[in-house]
Figure 1 (tube, helix red, strand yellow):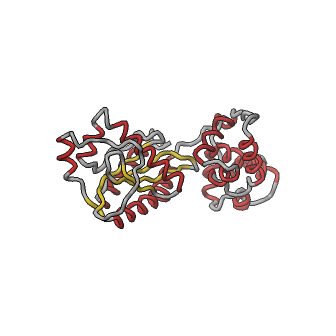
Figure 2 (cartoon, one colour):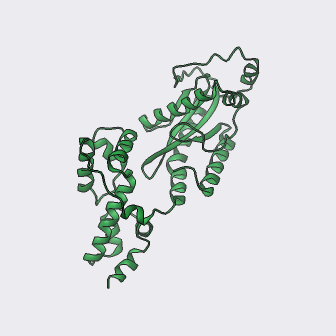
Figure 3 (cartoon, helix red, strand yellow):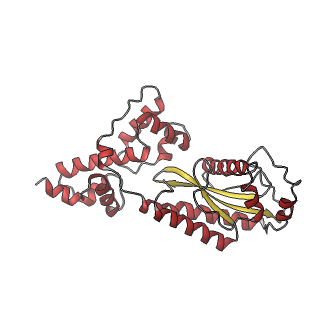
Length: 293
């Protein structure tokens, strides 16, 4: 969801470069497996050497993944030490209520006595490598306060600016894929049955992945994967499909204004409702209603 289009790639490059230029930290965006999907911005020589090594690169990617998952658990920015002892920051990137990757930054040392936890149990003994030892000497020192402040800024960028920009760039959903969607009856997992009942009951409200996963006592990350497996469609697309089918019914059978239809389905902005409707049915709510006449 984060990579693929040229526009998205340009956006990711711009964001990581500007964040690094502003804070002086290294930054990169990775997918949910911890693999880089943006360029490496302002990476220290030490970390460039680490990631160019067949031995250390997998450990760097595991730290990226583990750090991101820690941020998902707490729903806050995560500050931790990587396997080489450097301090990193991580925040989850959630697009359309789906975990899409992680925004990572850091590669610094702390000038205070603040003791940040290691995110990965295996610590690397790199001190025998003279090239890494020399590169380590140039790693910048940040105060604990500056590290914490940078982590908060990173969270704000991910939650608001990055999320909004990428959602605008998302490709239009295929009408055919939704019309031909056939749900798989959730015969085995009671959590999915409970989730579907909750969705039906609250379809006129704004429904989030976190809200429903909390209702069935599962983590949002695990619930998202389980829902896709059991229902043959991801959570966000399922909610959109339910709402847009109901929107069609309301436009056809009631005299409610388009604004009231939008609000009755949990959309606070009519313009966004119209955009979603058009993406699904290739026509606007107004044109659809007029076509029925």
